[in-house]
Image (cartoon, rainbow, N blue to C red; front, side, top):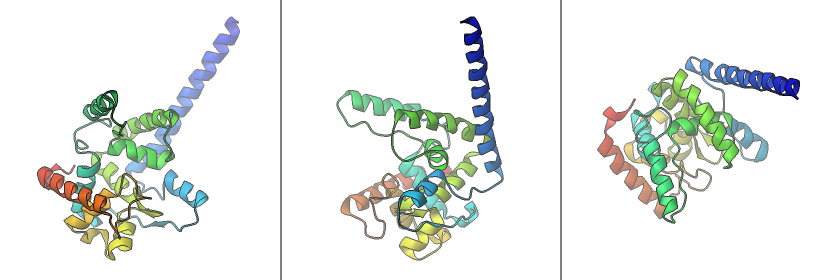
Length: 225
């Protein structure tokens, strides 16, 4: 039994070290190399019939309006936290304890980890892996680089990935030319990009757009990392 436990410990240590090494190998190159896609894109290609639209553009070719709109909509503490917004997590837990719907409290960092490496459907396994992959993203990449990658891999409609494809599809213009209102409308679809349509916004989507614009004005462009 003692030898078996020693063997199990050795293999567990090897597995952990191998997983850590794999995580670093997957993450560190992103400091310099643009990802050609994401796990979400791959799953979309394999499980749906619609075409994937995706064109990578550098941050300099994405309107600051969209960067600010996404932060205002999804993670207002993004420039300050280290991957996890503990205040939002506590608020979500407290809301659930009081009988409210359990809402997500994922940061942009966590969403990026999910998009790059994992899958859309919620589970405790995915949440644990999301937590794990968020750590090296925060340790190895700058906030500016994470935001650049996120804006290029986030889904803004069925099969529409990244700022450039979204801007061209919904507004017939480049991502660099997005106005405040257009950027806020794109950011508004992020919670459910397969349900919301920025080309034909519902009243609830327009209401969320107005809220995002208000948050953008409160934060200001100086809030961008």
